[in-house]
Each structure stands twice: as C-alpha cells, then as structure tokens.
Length: 315
Image (cartoon, rainbow, N blue to C red; front, side):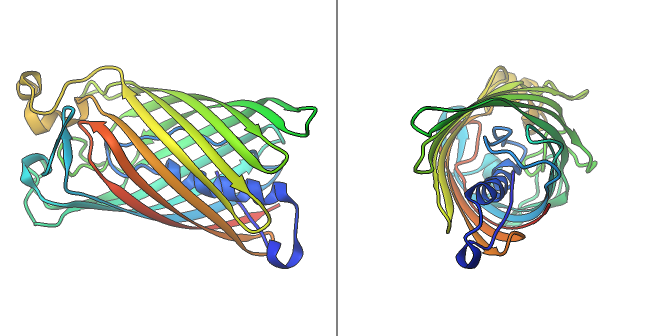
C-alpha cells in the first residue's frame, strides 16, 4: 500500500517510513498491466489509525514474445508485433484502526500494437480506458515481538474487483477480462532487529463473468526486503497458477472461438519484481520506482515493465 517522509533532515521514525514506502510499492505492484496479470493483494505493513495516503503511479510495459501454451514464441498472437501498455493508477488507503485498513485502486490503461495491425476481434490497433475498480480490507491478526527484538506478523485481506470502464473483454488488446473478482489473501512476515524482512503470501481469486468462464487462480509471492532512514527496497517472486482454462492454439481454443475466447485461457506466470522507495519531503511526500520481468509463463506475455510513483500522506 503506500506512504512518507523527510528523513534526510529530520530522521523521523522508521515505522512511518516503512508504512509509506511499503504502501507505495504495493501500489506499483497491485496495478494490472493487462488482462493477463494479477498480483498478491497486500504487503505486511499497516498504516496507523486515521492515516490517509493518496498516491499516483505510472507504469510502462512492452513485449513481443509470447507463451502459446507453455512454448515461448518470438511473436505475439496473430503476429501483431510489439505490444505496449501505459498505466496511470490512483490509489488511496485509510487506517480505520491500527490493525485494520481499507484501500481503493483504479487504473487507466492504454494498450497499442506498434505495427498498427488491427486486433482481429476489436478491429482497432489501440485500446484505452478505465479498467477495474478494486476495494479491499486488510487486517492484522497476530503481531508479536520475539526475544531477540525481531517481530513476527500474520494478517489477511479480502476484497472485490469490479470492471467499471465498459471495455470489451475479448481480443488481444483488451485491457481487462471483464471479471468480477472476489479475493482473499493471507500473509506471514518476519522482521529482524536490523530491518531485514521476509514476507510470504498466498491468495485465492474467484472470478465471474456472465459471458466467459474466467479461470479462478491461486497467487503466491515471496519477498525479501530491507529498509533504513534513507530508503526502502525489496525483491519479490510472484506466481499465478490458474485452476482451469485451455491453451492458445489448442483445439478447444479454436472450438471456443479463437481470439474471441482469450479470457478463458489458462494463464500462469512467474515474475520477478524489484522496487525501491526514497522519502523526499517531511512526512508527506515520497517517490518510488520499480522493474518487473517475466521469467516463465503459460498463455502469457514475455514482458518487462518499469514504474514510477508519487505518494502523499496526511495524519
């Protein structure tokens, strides 16, 4: 989720920096880059009661290689050439209490085929619009300091994601799958006295679309991070495992309508995420950046992306 701070001049509390920086990284990780992406739902840090964070982020993603089934090909579906996406996201989080927070996220996505080839379903070479509105509640279940001053935390989140942009969900350039998703996630975080932390998460996404059988999915992540007065950083491995669906190019894909049935494909991936946050001004502003690259997948793009963001926080 996201947050804060002027540590260079005022050396304010570590906990405040963590809240801001982690929230910001959460924003960047949370935003969907296409109809084929999803992330774990939260991080293991919580805002304080009545803290309000508002953030904006920009992400750019591109790819020209694609997994048809589990086979990596040096082209996109229908040989459309390089496909790129630009995403501007607005995010907000509010601390209802020290153990409960609520978040809202909404992205604006623009996707285009840089060769100008028309999408065989949509009939255009560029699609843009508001994607999906997400609302989540995150709760701290267990938080205990250990004898060596390290800390163990357990928590979870639940929420809903709603398609609000009126976009067309079928097609190669579609900006979303049009599914209403009901999400649940749990996490475990271990933090040492030297501010090194490890975080594990597991999530289940139940997806519903009246026109398509969107596969439900399990989403996992493992994160290693560190923070001090001047910066926060983490590396994360994120995995999605769809629980049903078919492969692009298979007979059942063809029988279902080919590109018209893309939302029903089985989408699996393993991604690497690298993120850094730097506080800039007092306890109000911070900046962050991120890099994501796909390592392996199934019916998924072989993409890389960069992200930049700004955070504003008030108590």
